[in-house]
Length: 298
Image (cartoon, rainbow, N blue to C red):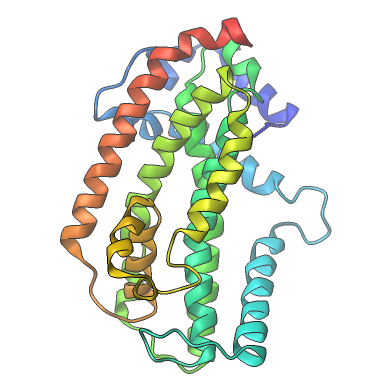
């Protein structure tokens, strides 16, 4: 992700003010206790907020409709799914016994989760490379950049959820109160995305080929998750391996809450969240350790 010149200038301007820039960011080079997994965004929320806002608006800068495209894109995709799978192919999701219109919603929900993860994964390799000024010229919390990428991805995901709910109402589906719990499975996934961001962005500084690998990996994870097909369509001995895919469990729990109005697997969510947190902590510690070599490479 490459920040505009105006964004870099505004962030740099704080270094010239009459307060301690490092204190403002609460920055420590090798700081990586468990609490800093979340603290990395809380203590640097001002910078994360400013860069996230510019990232969201900058995505559509210069376009005629601007931010409206955030709504148009998922609307068009859902419309295409409905037309192709609902009107032409008339495919039904076996496990739920719903109609072809429900299949479009099920497919869209899986795509929603994958898109969130894929955006964080594919942007990570160039996250540091595209912003060398933050590495060389000023004290900056580099670990916060992955939160900016996540914020823009979550923003688009939330819009897609709202559109999905309205679609369900439009096709006559009952929407349960459990839809309000949709952030719960997303929380664990977001932690995992942050961990992936720290890991891949650091590797990307030293190994440029990682950018090609992440694109391929994103495609593999798409087809190895129950997005286009239910888990039960596979032999039982293979179904377990789907859970090695980090987006499989969030997809299932998101559908349980939003589409089927059931309570989630609380134990499973707790285990997933714990595993994601440990993974994020480990990658943060590694990121903070190797970041001292970024300037030499860049």
